[in-house]
Length: 375
Ligand SMILES: [Zn+2]
Image (cartoon, rainbow, N blue to C red):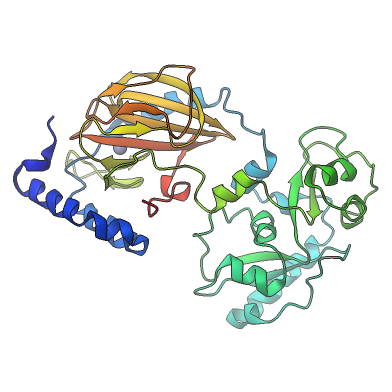
């Protein structure tokens, strides 16, 4: 199919959008409006992958269970995990106190959160938790400042916060009484001493905070609180939604977002869209969204010419509908590597890149890990 640029009403609509590009891209705060505008033309240039996506994804999931480096960084998987590992942690002494605080906060209602904390102490060896109810307009950085702890501390203690843009008023978050992060041991016989060394923090204090001995071997999978430790760079990027770069470096617009959407073929049913569709002229170069290794290339009826890149930490990205693939299986790529050119192969109604981000085999909303406002 040819690019719809010059055809009829859709063509003129798109021209208008191209004309407006600078205005939108220079003001990230307009992104919401920007996306909304394009919903109206989302039927024009999208992939039709949603209709048959169940079967296709099942195949991809099988691929994803192999060699994706899952679990190589428990901190990351802990943060992404839905299970609340901090509650399971046997070495955190004050979880009962925390639950009480949570109940108390609920009874106290909205105003509870505004009270100045009396507990933060970044030299103490006694770890306690209080709970904070998020208010409208709150930001993690301001909450952290109010409690005299690092933002890392809050992210680490609350693995339900996977993205800094996603805290909701009314949500309760745990506030540790000191700065530090949760760490889950990756192998047998790690000790407070070895963990403290890894994070370059005071080993004695690390042992005391966790009520254990400096050289006491910990069972694999034990979660400890590492006072004074900061998250690694990758985890921070992930939380800030900057883990991946945009796979298109030139102009595009979002013609279909991730999630449930009306069937692009107009059956009236809703279908699940596992990625984001980025419409742009045929031949636009596609770049890997993060450094990684190409684990699959080929043709499918749904995605046309596609490339899948594995990035470690359980992440994979898929790029579909390419007119040409410019990489090959096993190739190491980074964000400056052209891996293909935009096309309309497979189930597609016009030139666009279908971009999926997988975390541990499940597609996640790309806008949580790529900053689409930054362009
Ligand atoms: Zn798509």
